[in-house]
Length: 181
Image (cartoon, rainbow, N blue to C red; front, side, top):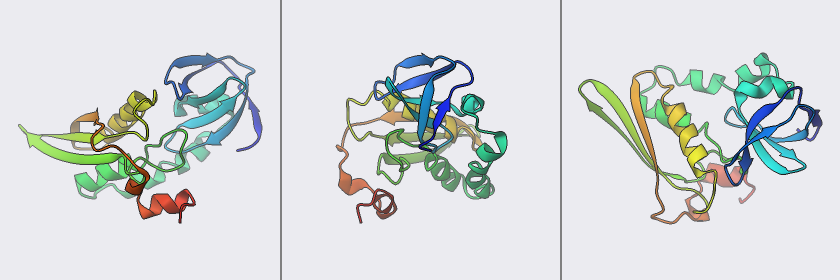
């Protein structure tokens, strides 16, 4: 963090806040601004971008450092499925805000259902701003995290706008992380 890193190879990234796919060429200078939820938000001369954990080597991040971040998920193994789902949702971050989507108050509903012996999850969530281009990316992150839970066969994440999100929806933990209390 706060140290310039030169990308060792070309990297596919997502431009923030538009959500557009971009390619950062090898040799691009970046500064990591956030390393939460298994992704890396970087500042470039062209603005912010999000780099996937699969490209951490281009940032010079080794596997051991990345592995430490997945230990929280392992701690929930054996817990009830709903607790595991909420645990995975707490690993999803807005790339511009260092608080997970649960503690930001973005997840409105989490319903587990079973049909024909298969467990599905339906999430209703919102964003801090309706025009955020990162919405589909954050929803896809939530869906892929949920699908890592053993016993979950399907997951749907719907973006909703009612009720409209406001700062009162942030949990006490989230407000503490943001320095609001």
